[in-house]
Image (cartoon, rainbow, N blue to C red; front, side, top):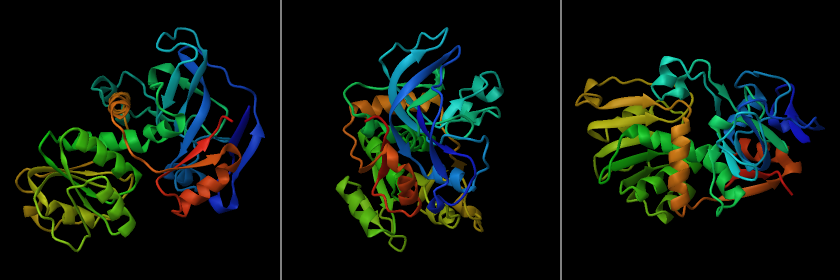
Length: 333
């Protein structure tokens, strides 16, 4: 098979990925092989390529927004049949027996492994995955459309779920990129009003087009108190800013994997049982729930596609912020 491999980390502008011919992989017991149709490009792929995250294996195939067709099945697999569609998220596997796995919090498993980091991902013609961690995908949606479901879609859904909001509540979104776009639409589908705060005029217009109840900048007065909020930029100063807009019992979710220092000088910002939590990866339950919602909802999302031959160009575009919405690699011709 053809695969783009990373052997040594370097700035993506130096094109550290190399296209090679690799032996076709085959699944072991419990595994399935997916003939990759499309794979989304995530900022995390850039972080791994450039060394912001350590390289867990070399050579490595990046890519964790994988969608395709099951074309080989390992022993003991009964969740999938040949020819079915399947999707793969960031969570590649978990131990299944630690206290976190037993509690349905496998995203916190200390032995968890991740697609495109610990295990080869989707910048290749085939990918191997544990069948228990693959998602069933609908037949009526395109592969290119579904690839971003596997990361910004599922991660956004988990961030939303962590707020604990119910129909009739008010949600604040701080920053409005691809993940927030999915969150807004899911929240609306569940009867929750969404208020968006962002600096970008382009993103403000995008939020208005999706019928956000209110859209403004960080210097504007929020017209209501919120029941929950999600911060997407890795800016610690946004935490006290958002807390000032939370009603009592409001829950603030921090979406980034890292943030600049957070300083809360006023206890009143968290008094009244206001709380703060972080987002740490996703679970299979999140993936299954989001795919169900996405399948039943006409989610709008901007997607820019790249041919398989242009994976390095796609990574550079994501790194430079030149992609409108999500970048997706068309792997299959």
